[in-house]
Amino acid sequence: MTTQIGDVWRREAPHVLAALLRRGAVLEDCEDAAQEALLAASEQWPLDGEPQNPRGWLIRVASRRLIDAHRSNAARAKRELHEEPSGAVLWNERTGDNDDSLQMLVLCCHPSLSTASAVALTLRVVAGLTAREIAAGLLVPEATAAQRISRAKATLRARGARFGAVEAAELPQRLHAVRHVLHLIFTTGAAPPSGGDVINHDLVAEAIRLTERLHRALPRDPETMGLLALMMLVEARAAARTRDGILIPLAEQDREVWDQEKIARGVSLLEAALPNGPVGPFQLQAAIAAVHATATTVQSTDWAQIHELYRMLLTVAPGPAAALGAAIALSEVDGPAAGLEALRPLLTARPRDHRILAAVAHLLDAVGSPEAADAYQRAATLTDSIPEQRYLNAKAQQARH
Image (cartoon, rainbow, N blue to C red; front, side):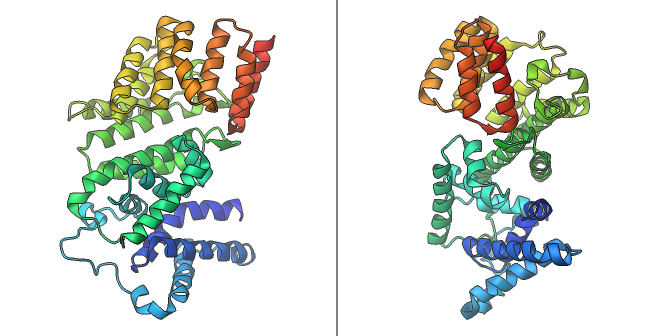
């Protein structure tokens, strides 16, 4: 499959699936039909050229495959989505939003699924991520990610779940998983877990686009505002994060090229979100990003405030990423030895997490330990990101001299 067809597929897959699901078919059958349409495109488009309306072409071919696969039940395959029980409210009818990608996100976060399963399923179905990319984003083994996707599909089939409508009362309980999915799409794009790109701009743009639409649909939801603020504040630093394909860490970035308009918007969203209810994890992460983004120099960064925000994040949403951030912030406040002590249990629990090992290497380097080079080298072997490998190997070489 060519890169061009792959780009079209990533953009159009949610719309193709949504069109098939409107016929009342189950998700697995729709995925199979959509994949057959993609295969047909990879064979025909290089010969005939890309059609003027690639989405329409893919939907037509996938629809034929779906009907062929269910010929004995063709009447059901042609049934309209709107044959739903009275009282059901379509997401796009309720909000005026006609975006299939956002609707698919909400619909995939079915209440019969655990949050972990819903996140894995929607990352696969809507964002088009591979099991390996999903595993990296969720910080779980690839086999675990694949099992979550498989179990989610099996659960939906067993429950007879249909993706045609969302009861208004169900919507709030789905939003937590939806926001989590959008965040993972963004972070996977902002720091691709594998390959040669420092940033996957397409994934980042898609995550921001969908979050903008979610914010417009739910303008008073503080965690959605917090999530959008976080994306704005992180994306504001994108131009400074790479130079000639080389990863530039935060401390070494040229802050003159940070996007001040995005920083201002992120701060404004955060200020609007914080007074409107309990402070959730995305608001706290946005607050941490805001402290970084508003510091004019790395030396003027308020690390004490960042450490306190990480401590708050650990109480609201404990996890390895928050614990790692807290340990790094502690090293800036109390010195590298304190940071190393805080990282010790994390490294014991997750010895193959290259992020933790890289942080340990940096702090070992800061205290002049000869073990720093080996730690950098080990971290480089544990990541599939080529820019991260280059950066960590270069640091290892520097530490040896």
